[in-house]
Length: 217
Image (cartoon, rainbow, N blue to C red; front, side, top):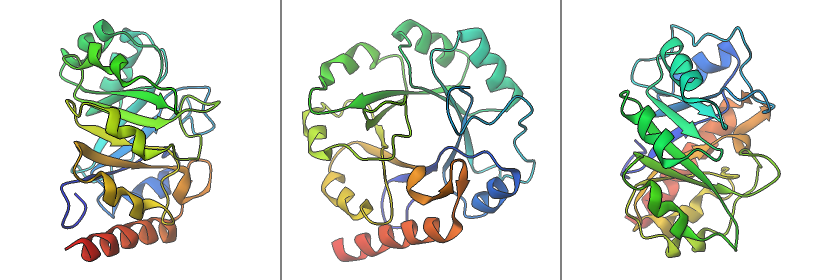
């Protein structure tokens, strides 16, 4: 949990063994591993989560239009806490995974034309929503969306905020702290390259959050 705020931190797009261990030592609440072959941050067929990753870090598998059986197999293999869904997964599929004991994070790409009413069908089937910037990729488009659009959301399900979060723009989340914001999902904004997180950029991100929090007290 971010110091002084009821908001958690998720580091996504992790792939390299040493980098996973180094980032894990900073104790983020969640760490995401992309199990979708179409992503430049895909972990690969032989990937194994390092044993040295602290148990307090919840492991999230990221999928796009995978079958339920495939997701459950991968969840068991990697001892996942949650699955994050970036495709056209139905409420029924979300519920089937949730019924197996995994948390479900359903992602939605947001732009100025996004209708938040589409989330209503998923409210009873998931644990969290994720609101990400709409772009050419299913996620990881390295840019934020207009966060003021979240005022149109009914706040019924806690959500992850994603899309281009970085040390340079994260102070803007101050305007969202009265919403049902569960966690910040950071990826490309702290990278040296796809799948390789900069510890210096991560520290700068965390410092920017703490400075924002200090100013709001």
